[in-house]
Length: 419
Image (spheres, rainbow, N blue to C red):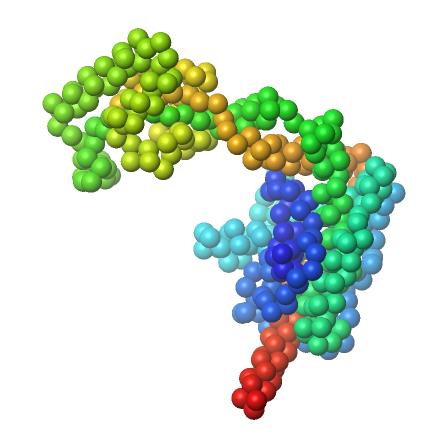
């Protein structure tokens, strides 16, 4: 995983229900990509003059990066981590809004009884505290990062500096994401510790490893997944569309006589299944011989679906069945279905989601147990002002690094033409 991709991985926040525990891979860092990963497009922003700027956090929020802004239990949370997460939260939110044509955030809008900007600052605080706690909790559990992991992060840092030519420019590369080399290292190592903790608590062989029964219950009850096959006899011409009386379009219905034949055939197939000694075994035979589902060849073992994905009639009937049970004839807008409910397969994908959910719950509990206390420095942060200055700083860094890379490419082209 390149450095840019790794930085993006850090943006999957607890508030979004995503895992923060993927950590950093080792080596193979590539600084050729210099876009402000995880940040909104800053091309329309006037670049900040970076002359004399030594601390990106002081330049954007008026706080030195090592300023303590909160504590989580006995552990200090500093401005650099908090402002990294604040930058990401704002960037991510703006990207979501931009899909609806909104280019400026409504900072004062109500979000659960507070303003949007204060909500994002609070979320950033939770994330900064969580990452601060990971190495401390890991140490209490007797976990230690491998030397390979530590060396890999150092190798990444060295590669960035080598490719960009000098320490100052390399440091500005991290500013593209409101990081510094030290913050990058802290995040990487904390994320790796999170991976160790997850394995320690919920990995195979641990007391918390989810059983198959727990995974199935989670997939079905919490996530709403189910699996089913069906025999479908179409009552619509799937190659012809018509405009309905209400102005909507849909597939053209077959004539009444043909529809009646399809219904009679569905009832006959159901009767065969009801009379069979092994209806589940017969189901596949009848399905392969009679079903008009265009997806049958791609999904011969049935569909794994979540609630709301299939047409309501199909879903309601499938969810009413137990594994191995067969429905009656079910009519939907597409035609007549006979449905066989199946047990879920590939439990590992759901187990991984369940483990991530459990790890998130554990992280939430840590934030309660290690009560977070903020101070005046935290209260002084103005997210909207910070964001405006952060964009200017990131644009300045971007332009600087682009110039360095352009010069290197020009030198390389000149050298190539002379050889």
